[in-house]
Length: 475
Ligand code: ADP
Ligand code: MG
Image (cartoon, rainbow, N blue to C red; front, side, top):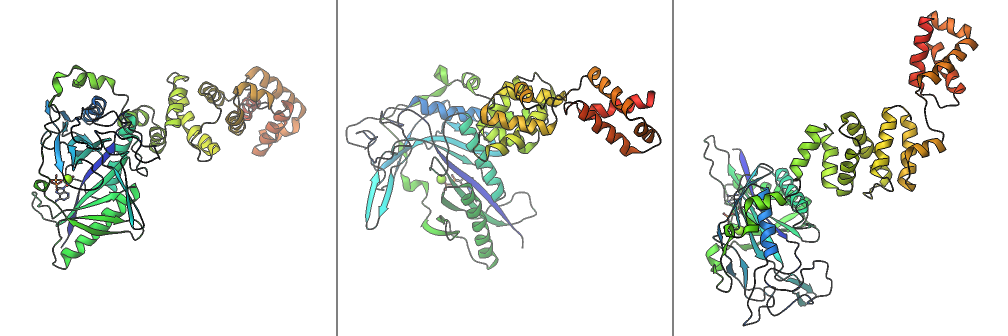
């Protein structure tokens, strides 16, 4: 029997805000000293009252607009009750029945919902001691849930990468997975492939603690194999939460999955209900206007309008230094498509080569780079010469025309100057000219060489050759 995997993702992202979700403590993921960004509210002291962070709500709504989701008219926060040393209140404030956003799609995957909650503190285990750092407790956390429609590990990773990119573009989260700013949970199930359309999904296993794209991919692949072999042996898959062991590259059972009623959700009585549609700055159109160019729009623009290579487009989309540089160069080129392509080729091969993985354009100014591209197109410099000039610009900056002059790299394409040179060459080499006329192709190469010599290396060899051919055949 054939088996078919199904994956649904739950992705958490720490939002970039000045303060925490419900208090004035600083939201600072860079803080190394434990328990400094804390206050009675995020420490859950009795008698304190939380206040909703508007900036965090707006961040989630912006994501909602970007993915074409439905923004809630009415929304509220709920208490999710569970007991763990890193949640000071004994409950986490989250959203249950009324998430901020419903539906939407990203990277062709249907989304279920996007809601807002607070992060927990961090437990640190040292030998027999356990310590808790509450700097992160109460930091605004966005949770995005997809429908169970992802077919394999690669698609799951591609989705997570696209979400990361979106969050960074919207500047709502740095979404760095290594720093735990974005965390992926993968729900995986396997079911026998049926010929009928209404496929029944298998029992799902939730894999937690996936802190890199590589882990997401490996963990999902591992789970698919594990579950498939269980089913092949006629055994059942237990519904549970599993962890990912990065070193052994295996998943391991953590706990039997709790049901949502275990959390005894109920609306937080300390927080007001929100009527989103009545808040002017949260209106769909207002938020839509604030969005910058979304990554997939940019991709479309680069690939379809400019016809640049997809892998180069991806470089400009994902690495801001190159993306911004490419955009500024384009502005100095005024829509000349062949120059845009030429620029892209020089950026993606030469500049990236020069930067030696440092993600930099060195001291190159976009307008100078654009001038160099024009010089190449107009054959004022050879491609060999252009590489030398670019290297100089990368290290020291400067204007390519000036550098070309200094380094004697300017080529003459001016027909008048070249014609004079040609006349001299033809006059001085009558026998070579007749050899060429008699069909000896290499003779022409010799004449070009003589012309280059005559011009002290400044002639454009291709144009020189063309002019020579013409001159000999017509005289
Ligand atoms: P829970 O109540 O256990 O959190 P949900 O129905 O809310 O379960 O789904 C949580 C996540 O699990 C979603 O991303 C969803 O797409 C995914 N999911 C649900 N059922 C399955 C399944 N059978 N196989 C794979 N993923 C699933
Ligand atoms: Mg869940």
